[in-house]
Image (cartoon, rainbow, N blue to C red):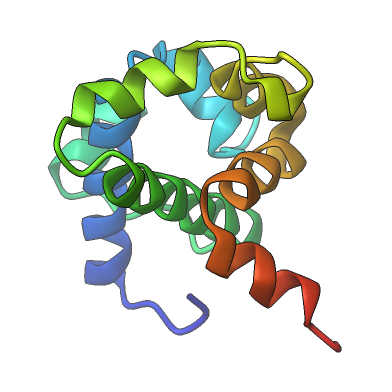
Length: 133
């Protein structure tokens, strides 16, 4: 995600804010999940849904990448009903120590996003396990 244009970041902003809205995440939590700078007003999320690009910040873009990866994994894990993926995010998961995936995302920051994505996406987990860098 390193060489994104302003238009790419605008599209990502729309997609990720819409996704977080679909997941029922309140605006203040969306700011935290995205690691937007302290003091960012929640009304900024509406601007992201219009045409304002996300900040060109590696931390923000890394989190967006994981959120989009989670969304994609939910679509492939539950292809017949998107509502089941949303339910899965809100239910305690045995393999995640009985924590709710949404709780992990909200409370654990970047590591929480990676934990949930790794659980859902075996190809991502495999790529991460064989990284040599």
